[in-house]
Length: 378
Image 1 (cartoon, helix red, strand yellow):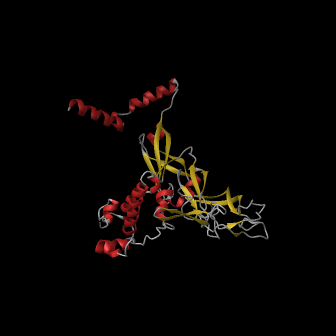
Image 2: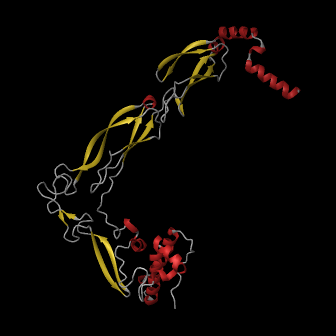
Image 3: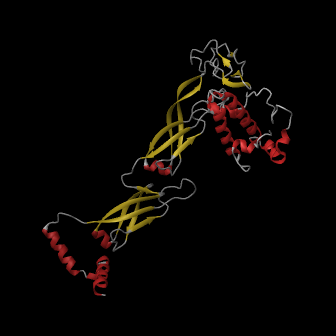
């Protein structure tokens, strides 16, 4: 009986993507592995071999192209041989089979872990004032991080000695374990338990770092807080994190910014908002009032007849744009305050004043009565 179509074996269509083929293979490999079928090992072994053979072709773009063009004839290599030759069926070095049963490279059965690895990122918070956030500031902070041990130069071995090649793995950081099974031999590559994948062992550890090759130190780092940052901004200082391993680069320092609230100003995007309380006399007669800005005090001219809620703009007096040129504005919102606890003389003076003011001199009242007339009288 001829071989089944490889697409049929994996249960995928001919147009299936590489990811779909790999997913189907993993599922079937688990299903038919002999160890998963102790009551029917012989039949499971046949199906497992068939599934693996199909994936070795369809999981390889070049072999798949040949198979799509010529079918099984493209790999007709004689009796008992599949597309890659299954005489011994040795899985050593075949990453996908490890992915299926041991969880991939992150597993202790995966790839060697002794290679260069980037150091960990460090995190810290800083608090700045409203003005410091607006115009930027440089600040020195202290952080604890892992660095090379000065005594041993990062080797972990006592001064005058050096790490030696691991006797168990010969310096590779990996050991191969081979087991014979019914249809050949099954090999797994694991991290060497003698050197933990580094390929080196230390006979006489450095006393300063206890053989780690690194120590934790307190360091001072200068942080440049750019103009325009706000609460939630994160500053990344490249290379200021923990030391990498096996020659890997250091991590980064991530600085999370919090801006303290201001007593007068509020921020809205890159604009600075403030509320200006004025008396109704100032609002009615107008005035020139000294107000604060981020850069100091300035004069604001309040025109005669200014109404409650009026808004004035001081162009370019806001927050500098974090990504680009220019600045926001300072927005001044007028709040007319009314005096309380008037004495009788003050009340009488106000009554006399009010009797001299015509109704159409009140802009808001004039508008209100007009709306009332339109609504009820048509």
